[in-house]
Structures are given as C-alpha cells and as structure tokens.
Length: 366
Image (cartoon, rainbow, N blue to C red; front, side, top):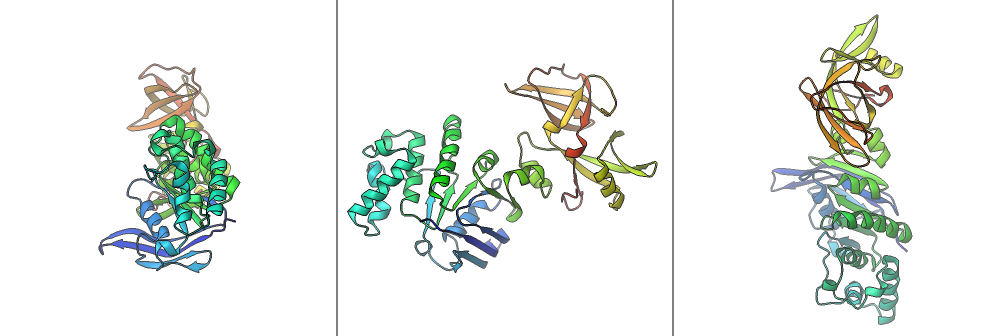
C-alpha cells in the first residue's frame, strides 16, 4: 500500500553563502495527492526537488515525510523514488530487468520480484514489452518504463522531474493522461516538477507556484486561474497570458471609476465598493484574453478604443493582438472573426472578470 505525506517547515537553501535559491518555503502534500511544483527557469523548483530527495542539504528549516523528520537523512533513508526527463534506463537490460533491478538490489525473492514487475507492467500497459531493450521502445514506452522503475518498489513519495520534456507534443498529451491514470489507480503520492503550466494544470490536484525561491501561491488549477494571488501568478497561468493595464481611479457623481488612457472602464458594484475603500489613486487591472469583447463600432459599454495589430488563426480560435495607446492586449475570439490590420476597434471588458492588483505590492486586491 502506498502511503506518503510531505511537509516543509520554513525551508531555506543558500548556495555558497550567496545564492538564496529557496526562501522560507512551507507547504504540505497530503497522502495520495498529486502536487505540481511549477515555475520558470531559475525559480527554485529544481532546488526544492533536490531538497525533497535529499540530494541537497537544507540550510535552514525542516522536512518531514510521513511525520518523520528527514532533514538530515540520506536519499537512501527517505524511501523516495524519482523519474527523470532522460528516462534513466539501463540500455543493456530488457524492460523486465530494468523494472526488476530496484527490487533485486533490495534482496527481494525472485517470486515477489516477478509478481511486482508484472503487476506494474500491467498497469502501465507494457506487459507485452518486457523482453525488449530500451532501444527498441518508443519515447512514450521508455517514459512508462521509467515511471515503472520509480513505482515498482512502492515508495512513500514519487518525484517526477520534467518527465515529458523530451517527448513530442502528440505523445506528451497522451502521456499526461497516462500518468494521471496511473496515479489514480495506484494512489501513490506524486510530486511533479515542471516549467510547463499546461502540464501542471492538466495533471495535478494542486499546484505550488514558485518564483525567485518564494512560494507565490498553492492551490487547485481553478484557484490559480480564476483567483490568482498576485500579478506573477496571474501572468504565468493561462495561454495566452493575462493582459495588464495601469489605471487611474477617479470619482464620478461620488462613485469611483477607472480610466485607462482617457477611456472609462466599467466595474461591478462589488468592485466599486472596494474602490471606495482603496486609499490609492492608481492600480493595475488584469483581464484574460477570453474575457474581452471586440466590436467594429463604438457602442454602449465598448468604451476602450484600440487598433488591430496582428491576427493569429489557431484553428479552433482566433487570437487578436490590439494596441491601446502603447500597450498591446491579446483577445481570444471565435475562429471566423476577421479584421484588417490597423483597423480601429472598440473593446469591452467583462466586469465580473476584471482583476485588481496593487501597483506597489503586485498583490490582487479584489
């Protein structure tokens, strides 16, 4: 039976006394949970992975696995399995022997080894590949064998380091589904480390977003997309990313309104009440491309004037980039929508979808 919880308590990692790669990181991974650690290059996600695995020493803080303090334990003492982006298979061993190797070095009986190998091969859908060498396998099959090697000894935690980065796009979509299915069937606690937000959103129960060594937000994919905690998360999650515009807060008939480059932006009654209590005269709004409507004619509620910069037909949708003064915004529309380059258009932002961010703290305030 798989069982694994992970807890970070104010964990720090400083390299050579100068590079503070992980800063006061605290989070918990529940038993049987699939957590993705997501961030751009240099964000601290790989350092976090290495701290979990015991490949790096903690500068300060505590790490617990199943409520057991493991901060100073070696990788061998932590009962963690890892699946790497480069598969990590022995090229001279067949699939069966690659899967059996972690069990044999633990002196497991041949009967138990055979039972475990065939059980995991059945779940992974590679039972008919057991006699093949890695060179005879497709990229997808190699990745499944790599996952099988990590899972066959039933670790407390399974860590997957960019497992799909060397797989072509078509196979990547297939393997995302497969990894999620395997996790659901086996119930093993899994931590995925990735820079790919689509990968994290599609596979994980919760996502930990990290940037410059600091935890930005920990939540479900929906929480990160619809309720980003700050400007970084809002801009990092979503394809195309969220649009941002700096606005001035003014008063009309005793009620606060927003202006961008002289154009008024209507806000919901709830947000209007928030602006009444907000003690600054500027903020930044965020709006997703799918929450902007576009018109060729000025009309009520379409108060923002723009010019079409470029059209990107993507089959099932059209991405239109427009310029508002010196800013460029992306708009997602139906695929049959067409405009001329440099054509003047008018925009409407869906009131209930506008996010407010403080200019100084970058935190979302509504």
